[in-house]
Each structure stands twice: as C-alpha cells, then as structure tokens.
Image (cartoon, rainbow, N blue to C red; front, side):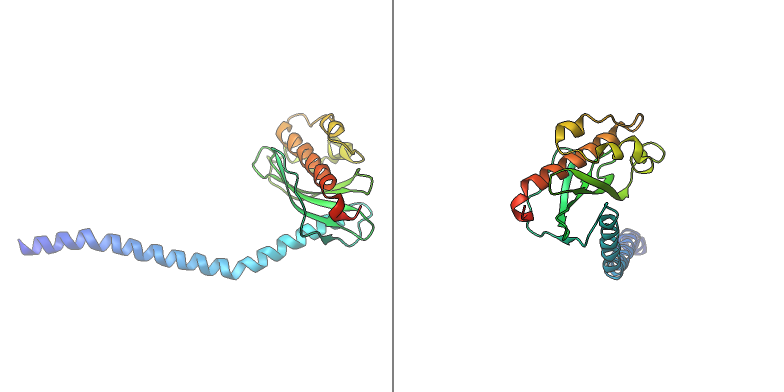
Length: 189
C-alpha cells in the first residue's frame, strides 16, 4: 500500500514540476532572444522611418521634434514629428485600416500647411485590396497631395474594395494636418 502511495505522489508531483521547468527554460530563452535582437529591430525600424522621410518630395535632413502635441483621431495617431532645414514638417502616423495599426505612414506638410507627399513605412493590410493604397497611389494617395484642410481630405474618393484602408489613409492625413497645425509654435512657423 505504501508503494502505491509513493507512486501516486510521484505521478501527481513530477509532471507539473517538469512542465514548470520547461516553461522556465522557454521563458529564459525568450528573454535571451529579446535581449539579442531588440537593438537590431529598433535600428531597422529607425532606418525604415528615415528612408520614408527621404522619400518625401524635396526632402532635406529631418530632425525629430521631441516635445510636440499629437492631434490623434479615432483612426490615427501621430507618433513623431520631424522638420527639415527647408521648413517642411513630416508626421509619422500609425492608422487603423482594415487591421488595427495596419498603416504606418509619413506625411509631409509644407510651410503653408499643404500635404507635400506621403510615404509608407509599413502596410499590413489585406494583400491585393488594402495594399492598393500603397501599390496604386494614383487611386488615393496622389489625390491627397496638395490638400490643406480636413474637409478636402474627407471629400476625396476612397478605393473601391479597400474602404477601411482608404478611411485609415484619409484619417492619417487629417491627423498629420491637425498635428502640424497644433504645433506651429514648436515648428517655428
């Protein structure tokens, strides 16, 4: 009877202990992987943003404005504000298309408050539909360049079949225009 009690205790205690040990090892490996890759990932993200800034028309050398007031809306959030030596502002925006946070774009705005250009950092929208905002700029993005007020932006037709992505793109431009407008003092305009 004593052997049965020992066997029963072993079968009740050992499997959870082994599972706990496996979980601890896996957590340790995840921590190690994070510590090894986090700087590389951050550098790649920063390089991608800089590349997008340089894609703006007539782009100079952009510097980040650290203390700015973001003017977020229900579909888009400003995450950074930049300015080049020519006075062009650029706003890094994360917007919800079909996917939450599916559009990360840089919107350039000139001294007069008009959109100078839009470049894409990342697009994680539905391939073939939502990605049309990037792959077919003539359908939407080109129509947003030159606009300077949210009513005009909202009046631009979206892309058929990419309704959510179109709404997210227009919300991103609205957010950028509002953010630049709210930060005129910081931008020195």
